[in-house]
Image 1: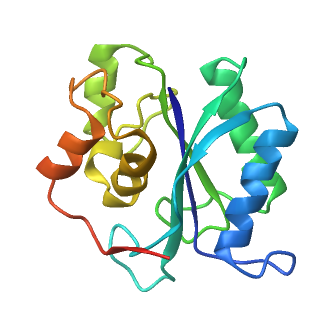
Image 2: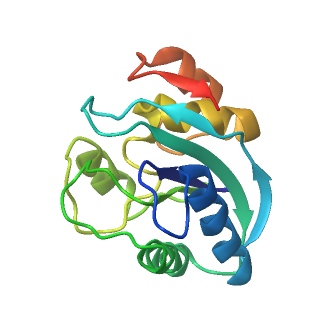
Length: 175
């Protein structure tokens, strides 16, 4: 299973809502040959860490693709750029954020490095599964909707279990 997290809390002249931006990103994935298997509902979510920036709209999709994990991540970054994302500061407001949450049961770069990166806020290499997905309600709640049985290859826990075990990190409500 391949899961992609989507988030937005800024709009553009072309896209008047964060939901429209998420729809556009999903469409761009389709146009580039990525098959969308399932899509969660859209959720309105409090920024994490808490700040005065606008609330986010988040969702998770499951996809199928012939692209490798690095190729898919590259495509996702290109889509972000095409939709107007400019990367400046970590945890800043953004037009679009696409995160490769998992790529089947693969661990990148390897389990030891993954464990090291999971406790840092910065890293230069591709890290899969996403190193903080297990801590984020805005990821786990929509992921649970479409893939609750997916098992994290490092923790050997499914999404339902991770969601039940973690402390809430902000308000998440169905949009």
